[in-house]
Structures are given as C-alpha cells and as structure tokens.
Image (cartoon, rainbow, N blue to C red; front, top):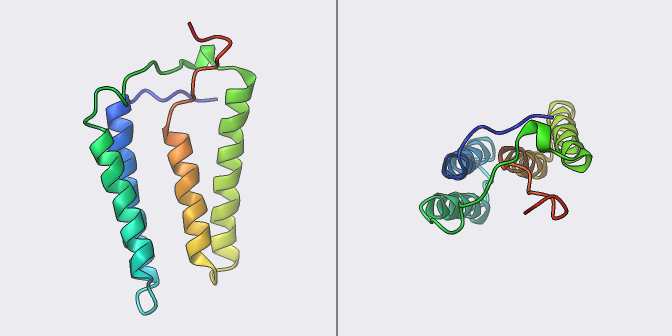
Length: 124
C-alpha cells in the first residue's frame, strides 16, 4: 500500500513525539477529571521509544519496499487505516468516551508508522 522511507531511528523518535502529543491532548481535554496515571503512561511510552531510538541493536533491520510487500502486509495497512478512520469518526459522532478512542488512534498511528515486518517465508 505505502512504504515508509524513514529510518528506524526516525520512526522511533516520531513515535516518541506522538506519545507526548497524545498525552498533551488527553490532559487538555480531560483537564478537570484527567487521570494522571494515563498521562504518565503515555509519557513513559514516549520516553521508552525515545530511549530505544539510541540503541543500535533494537533499531537495526531492513525496511520493506512497496514492491516487496506481500498481500497480507498490504491488508494490514488497510486495516489500520480503516481502524484509524472509524476511531476518528467515533470521536466526531460521540465525544463522551474520548480516552478509549484516543488510545485506539494512538495504536493505529504507531502501527502505521512502523514499517511492515519482513515475512518469514521471504526473509533471508
């Protein structure tokens, strides 16, 4: 479907920034009743991804080109885009349960940012 042209370190740092933004959005919208633990969890995940971005072992590996993707990997990306769209639509329609939809949006964006995992049958 689409290929990610960022390096793994850039992807990890982008996810860390995304986590801080999600924590800020959650805290600003739920301010009177904001759960501090949820905000800390988002920030801790962001700090974890930022720390991982400096590791040579965890960020090494190949990224898959668009032409080399299998049908399953393309289908995974389509499913994540569909989940992201439905979550955004749920926020627009029903604003009452914002934290669950925000979590689903966060997970979908993280999955879309990470490049597809090489298929075991085609990996060398």
